[in-house]
Amino acid sequence: MSETVHKPTLYSAVQPSGTITIGNYIGAIRNFKLLSDEYDCLFCMADLHALTVRQNPADLRRRTAELAALYIACGLDPEKNIIYAQSHVHQHAELAWILNCFTYMGELNRMTQFKEKSLKHADNINAGLFTYPVLMAADILLYQTNVVPVGADQKQHLEICRDIANRFNGVYGNVLTIPEPYIAKTSAARIMSLNDPTSKMSKSGEVDSYISVVDDPDTIRRKLRRAVTDSDGEIRLDPENKPGVTNLITICAAMRGCTPEEVCQELQGKGYGALKDATAEAVISVLSPIQEEYKRLISDKQYISDVLKSGAERASYLANRTLRKVYKKVGLYQG
Ligand code: TRP
Image 1 (cartoon, rainbow, N blue to C red):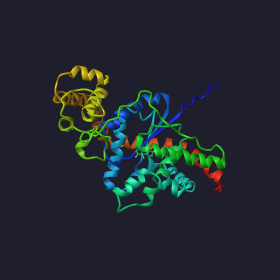
Image 2 (cartoon, rainbow, N blue to C red):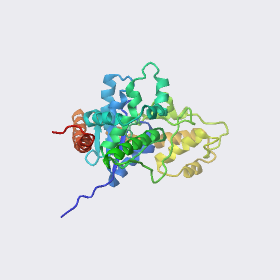
Image 3 (cartoon, rainbow, N blue to C red):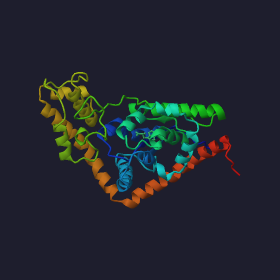
Image 4 (tube, rainbow, N blue to C red):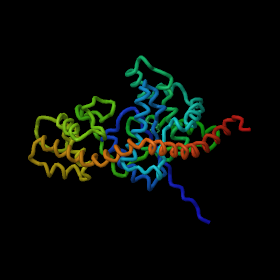
């Protein structure tokens, strides 16, 4: 009798609330396609999370489709991986409710992201913003996830997810798998903002601070030409004293698939202009084929809609198994 071999499950979600930057690409997305051999992967468009701040409805809808197209254009196979929108799988909101009842106000109050977002959106500190980590825990726990690739900004959220799951299991037995952070085998390069290279490149920064995966070649050249450097004129790695130059070298090397040292060697004695040009051309050559594929996919509305529909069906099947178990354990009448 043949046995199905279960690979561990990897869960990742991104809010469809902006664009994808080359930081996301280098740090996460380009590695995802390799991970799908080793893990059963789910890639979620966290559209419910996006609602914790005001969204223009048409933009949110469009960005959800764009994000799906972008994932696929970056090489994620929608048959091998489950690519879906969070709102299409009703079990997320349902498990989030149950988990709300296993989460303390004090815990949520300590979340640094909540504090930051409350300051940024002082006119709209809604309960969804407060319980955001509980919905995120539901996302992860619904699929009995083993690993979650998280950046530094989401570490605390994964930690509370583990706390909630352990608390639940403490009462009802081993119902929920405790997820671990995914640690990349090769430490991923950290890509910094172009105009403030001491902070991380982010889609919520100023438009000139990041390069979007869909920026055209002229925009990429312009943004890199304006990138902040320093005045000593030497091309070398020095994150402390030369964060801007180090960032450019890092981007260039990541895009070329070589080491930062090789970039430095090649450009030794040249000016920052040469480094910026080399970086721009490296970025453009990686992004061009992705953008071409992206344009083709985004114009095929039916295809994207089919991918999301099938992703939601597959996700829903898995999610339902966990939710039923949870409902039963907590004592909801099952008939
Ligand atoms: N909060 C994450 C972010 O903004 C997105 C997210 C939602 C997520 N649900 C998740 C990430 C589950 C990992 C796992 O980046």
